[in-house]
Length: 289
Picture 1 (tube, rainbow, N blue to C red):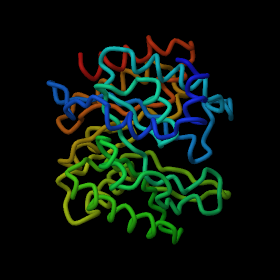
Picture 2: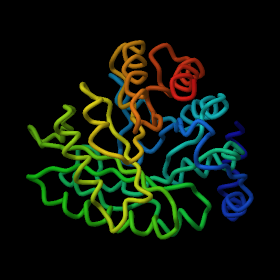
Picture 3: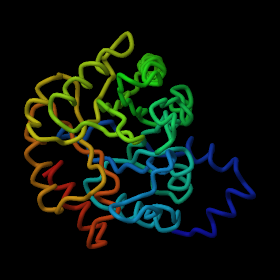
Picture 4: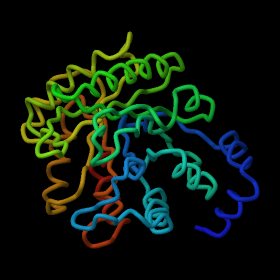
């Protein structure tokens, strides 16, 4: 990846971005097997830069882009999820042809902020996603019964579901049932909490025809996946477990009927051994193998 070229284009020729979106080769939403593997790279826009015990692991943009370039080059990787800054770097580098591209929409709930649960839309809008030829939008919905910011998030996401549906584009919703504890937001990762969040967000908007879910893999995942008929993509989260244990859990979850694939970021881009290509290949074999 020519990082000098990216910097020059952004400084001297910003109109190249719109032209590149218009020229991008697109592909069908689903592979022939009906599954997808998407690499996530939208954490940074909420100020979430940490991986395992390194709080700024994702702070270097050149390093992140190199890792994303490796991931997108591997067979079986269907696409990428990100905010405009990251996606446009990948676009200018010529890495998004024949890939799915999902725009992250609500990044307003900054990690650690007093307003963290007020996940307002500060990134892509549905109209911008459609105008640029992206393949769908993604929303984070953290539901905390003690935080009034939750209702703002629910209202904005419901509106985005309808707007994306009007363009016949998928709305990928990532829900969590959350609490505040000692000033920190904690997502409850038990089956009952995830099932409750699934039922709340599945009802957002006036149609669920284009709604997909992005769910954490938790114990008793079979019950979670039986709580909906919507397509479910499972997320990887911050990779703290042994990779082999993580892959085994993913494989078991992918065997369920509503499981449509994986959306994984840090677990693939920052594996413990540093081998991005090998981690991505294992995930691709689980999804498409």
